[in-house]
Each structure stands twice: as structure tokens, then as C-alpha cells.
Length: 317
Image 1: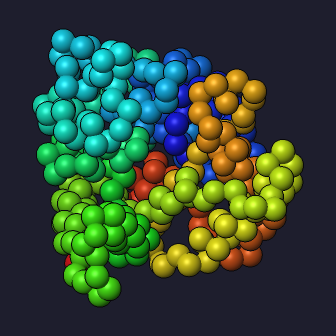
Image 2: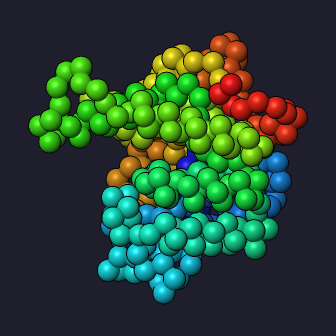
Image 3: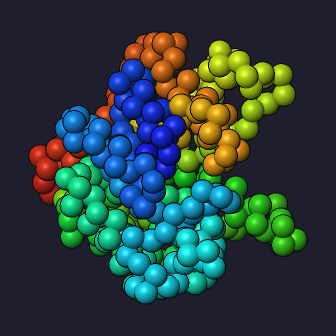
């Protein structure tokens, strides 16, 4: 679950699911306003599987945050308001890899100073995947500190579909797409597999795949957005379909479980789909589906413990 620390509502939704639902892991945005509360929760629940949602963007119009490293140290990460840039493209165009490195290290440092040692690292809005230089710094941070890194390095079935769709949409917008043309996706996926092998050889676990499309599941006509039960059934059915298509291996499914109050609408217009994630993950029908289907729920802590018991060959060998 993404976006812990972003808001009170984000924290409340995540805590609800951890205590009463199916999802097992979450990650914290260290530059955000509600970090202190979620870190107190983590310290009070040492079994919690909590990572760092390394943050280089501040995407909302009126609810912003700034780099922890400071404006003078990472000027390329700061917009005219003194906050982080609102888009991944802006970060990629203006920030250097050294600035990115300083900021993600500052975020890890704050977590450690607060008594929170993360179980893993991942990337808010995928910004650390926006350039090979950013990705190298992200991977290096995990290897240096022996912290698992979210990176799909296996069969990559879901992530390849996502990258294909992204590239086709871009080519169509530019008027350059033709049916059956060769895409760059396979080369990108192969590059991730090579990095995955590097992480594995460094003693870290590696994902086989990553499902990152749930944020784009928009509420269809006919669903009453004020009816929690309709939202729950709609979202639960989508997650059932997603998991039914899984291939063997370890797949991370990204979601944004949020217990929305009236104030969340002042932050973002994404409250309903975030609330729907929380409702689906606490749905008894979804729990039965997982049990009957034989799905194994795990955590980054458990993956790291398993990796430490394995010696030998590379991940893809």
C-alpha cells in the first residue's frame, strides 16, 4: 500500500487494512505532513512491514511538500513554490542524479533517526525509474544498506503489458504508431531483469512481476460513488480478476488504501478510488477468494529472510 504519511486519511486507511484486511505491506512518504503519526504506529507495531516510498514529486495543487535535503542542496528538485515538482517528467528534465541521490539518502536518514528501519524501498509515481541514472542510485541505496528494492526482475508479465500500453499511447499521440511495429518494451524489461540479477547477487530478494494499474481503474457508470457496498463489490471484482491472471512467482500489487473523510477532497480528487481500495482489501469475500484460490500473502521482511537462506546462482539462472 502506497502513500503512508501523506495524510491522516491515508494513515487511517492503511492501519485499518493492516489490522483487518488482506494487504500485508505499506510504504511511507518521508517528506509528508503525517509521517510522525505513522512512524509512531510502526514503532508500536514492530511486526509491521513498512518501507520507504521514496518521494521526488509533490503532485497536488494545494497540498505540497518539499525535499528533506534542502533547497540549497537539491535545487533541481524544487519548483517555483519551493515544493517538489508536480510531475515525473519535470523531475527527469531538471534534476541531476546526484540531487536525487542526496534526497533519497536524506529520506532514509530521517526514517532511521526516527527509529524506523524500512523493510524495503519503492518509488512514488515511479520517478526513480524515469532515467537509468536515477535507477542506478535507487538500486545502489538498497544494496549499500541491504534493504530490498522494489524492482520487477522476473517474467514481468504485468509490467510488460503496462509498458507496451504506455509506449503505444505515446506513439499514437505522435502519429507514429503502426500495428505490429517493434516496441522498445522488451529491451526495457530485459534491462530490469539484469538489474534484478544484480540485486539477487547482492543478497536481496527480487520481484517476479509488478501490477501497477489499479490507480487507473475508474468508477464506471451505474456505480453509486456514495454507496460503500457498491464501491466494495466493484473494486473487489477487479482485484479478483487481476489475481486470477497471475503467473507463478512473487508479484507486488500496488494500491492506495485510504479512509477518506471530507477533508481528503481538499487534497485530491482520487479519494473514491482510494477508498474503494480500502473497502476491497477489507472485504470478507476477497479474503475467501484468496483462501480458496491458495494465494500466499507475504511481506518484504519474509522475502528478505527467505533470500538470506538461499545461496548460489543468479536470479534468472
